[in-house]
Amino acid sequence: MAERLFRLEIISPDKIFYSNDVVMAEYNTTEGEVGVYAGHIPMTQIIAPGRLTITEEKEQKTAALLSGFVEITQDKMTILAESVEWPQNIDVERAREAKIRAERRLGAPGGETDIQRAELALKRALIRLDVADHS
Image (cartoon, rainbow, N blue to C red; front, side):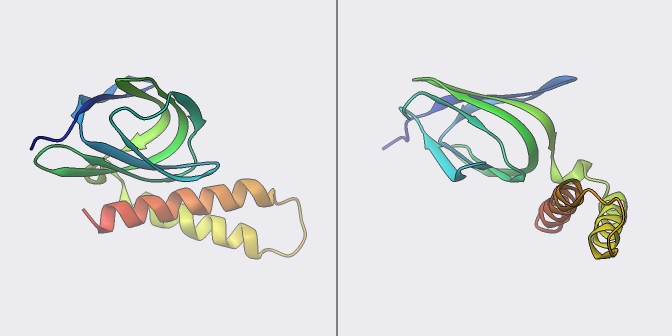
């Protein structure tokens, strides 16, 4: 029996990142982890940094989805991604350097460190490294 499919479109600021019929999409929101199948209740969500897993009929794809918004309708899901990357496009060395910088900022006593910004930078770097390492 064939799985029900729905259209997933991921649009980044400079291109259409992905467009295909899929079985399922899994990602993080500000409310927690979400998995979407065909026929999901319509809604909008805010993306939280995390791994995006796309299940197609014959394969699974993974990307680092770092920020954006999701709109789910009866037969389509659109992700307006501010930042999304395939594993092969992640600059691992740059992500390692960003991780080190964020850890230093978080470890610095007092000062003018924006803790929330440093924590977000660290989370993004860790997600990039995780996605790149598991591709």
